[in-house]
Length: 119
Image (cartoon, rainbow, N blue to C red):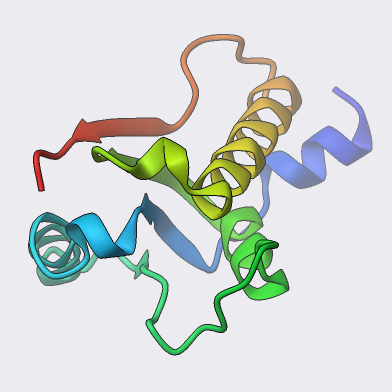
């Protein structure tokens, strides 16, 4: 194992879980309940705030939070894939998951949970 992979394997993460979801579909229903359930179990979870500026490109804050999360939960809803923002998050999550697995010498499943929400 190289020194870079060793340092990644021993990385201290700011968040236990990063939630990826389409806000207009699930923010005030499923995701809100999931977030509070995780918090109640003392699982430090990143859920984007409605105050984050919305735009065409994923923000640096979101990218940093994805990079600083150990696990990811993706909540697929009807319009998740129609959001370029959500798709950018998903790409970044997959990149981070791939780097993490490669650094740890594990080629199994990534640290991702996927949920399908009906709204």
